[in-house]
Image 1: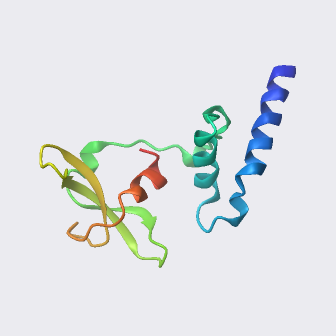
Image 2 (image 1 turned 30 degrees about the vertical axis):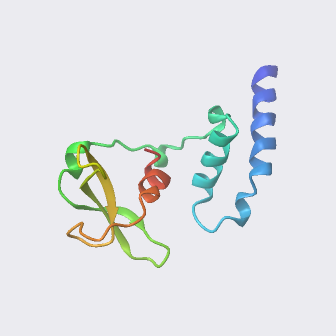
Length: 113
């Protein structure tokens, strides 16, 4: 029990130093990134609402995801070629045809992949 309380204390101290209250976005994402940077991934809390199953088959064609850009526009995920043309990656796009690419970090920020 003491070790658990010690761990919770360390996590809370790290959370307070993250300064996510000044982050204009998803505070949970900010905290998770902060914990990862500090090497404290064990502090990342998972809620039932945060759990999801990612099925690659769902994204072999362009598909709208439950995410929006800073202006409230819907985002889409679909396959895209790597810069070398040797691999197929998932990309984030701003249109339903997956032709206008959005920031690659959006997929990482939202899904953590």
